[in-house]
Length: 317
Length: 294
Image (cartoon, rainbow over all chains, first blue to last red; front, side):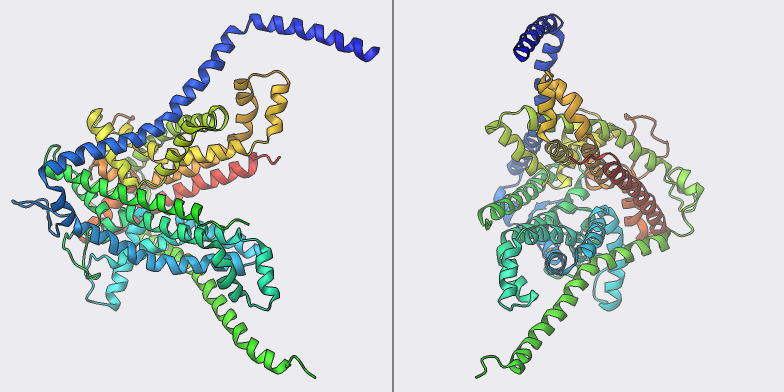
């Protein structure tokens, strides 16, 4: 038959072509084998980055703990790295970090969540398409610009209302950090809320609930894992934030709970110490790594917690 | 017999509806709040910089004298650094994404690399600064040159570039590569001629957005130890340098000593924001112009 013959002919042709092709193939088959190896080496660089971070932090931190007992570091309330009898207690820094992050979350948590509710439950598609990218601009502004804003605008503003506040204080950078984190929480929470199926909303609305009741009794409980994860990521972001607190909160190492005063965070300490003076090999130099290690562990735990929460408690529909 | 009392129902509903409407306003206000702050921020920066951005400011050398100070050195430093960051992150980022999406067997190793990348994305930028200080500046004895800063920032944004490139590859539909295999193309030929061209706009968009993140990064540079004052312009990647965000940082903290420094910082912020705006517009342009929908 015609079709059969056709098939035969092509089969012969293909065989010939394959044979012909194979003659000039050695180069391209080398490329075929080499490319995955090269790409694998690229991919492994990210693993080396992590290993590099952990090893540098760990070795220098161990060196630091040989000079300063680990117990003194984690329970010391006095940090005087530059004095004649230096003391290296990390608690003032931890305190500064926790207080600034708390202030930031008090701003970003409620406002971010409310914005998420509006965008996901109330806004029309058109409004959302305008508002969301505009909010994301806020997330794209470099942190140094927020630092400038906190120092030259927010602090003077606060001081004009509340004169007790010092020129460098933890309150102003905390608030500005919160503003910086709003888009992150809004966007992640909105994602979580808009992935709740409409059928559940319609069920509640059909029973006569208002939109507000639907939001708080149906949507938020269903999206809770994603919302909590977004909060945890926000905290992690606040802990690791550097420039805003460095600029606007000064470098006082006092162990205090007075938010009108200057406090130093872990990140700001790293900037201060690494910014030149500390020569390699001094205890101050090693303290840099111990503080960075603490910071690294804190943020890593937060990020793992966020992932655990969003996986473990996700409601599947 | 009446089961429903209309008056009662409206009476009960009214309160709940009013509550709904009031809170709706509150939610809208919360959404707008961020935008209001953004407007104030930009307004402040513009007002502070008015009269300070002139030709001398843009092209002048660094100076402690506020009237004479210029940011050309910082601008060149930032641009040189991007000339390091862009190729390094593009090659490593796209390479890693191709490996993970198209070559790696789904298994332990691939899972480790993938988890590791998402963990790296959450590491604070200042920790990368310490890595850069220890490895590039000290161990490799580069000193605080452009190359060291650029490599540090490359590691910082690499996870973002990889994830964006992976998503771009995943968005290429399977029938394209199947057609290519069906025509007898090898795997690399398929990747090179079919998958990469289709995924490139998405990859570039992600890479440019990551680059704009790198341009604004300050914390890693402070750790590496960029000096406050460098008079000569950088002429290559092995020169010492300063960068726009560092310039903003030094002028901001010194503005309590010399008030005019705040104006200089504001002027530099404008330049930085314009740079970011151009980059982001380019990213959006590429996405809209070249992104194919399948």
